[in-house]
Length: 156
Image 1 (cartoon, one colour):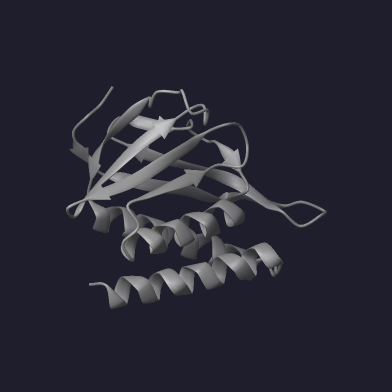
Image 2: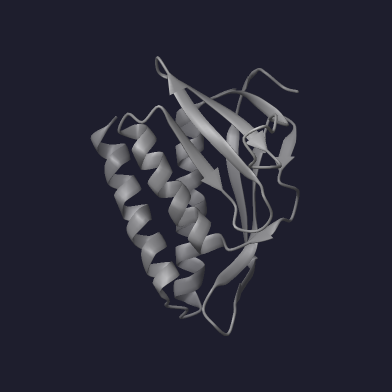
């Protein structure tokens, strides 16, 4: 298990985005921390929905929350981010049960993570707009992205 200070980043592949007949947008999305790709490389999930959740959780952290959970919709995967005295920490879990142990954990650079989240969310919003995919999920992500940009600007 890793316990150093590294980069935590979000990877989305907008080429894999697809719009289901009932509205959800799916595509490859995963995080990278240290030498761990989580939940796995090329993981496909409800990209617009979870990026919106992650933006909202990150806003709460920027505004002072001590811990936030970042869920995936498929599977029982999640990661949490906590902060203490200005340092941010991540723990990745392959099972969200209260007794599970993290598969990796450690500190990371807050700014790099926030920039990665902004870029990932923006790329999904832009790709959906280019395809004329308007849905409540895309609208929610766009609003969450705007709110995160404001939170970042106000808390520099």
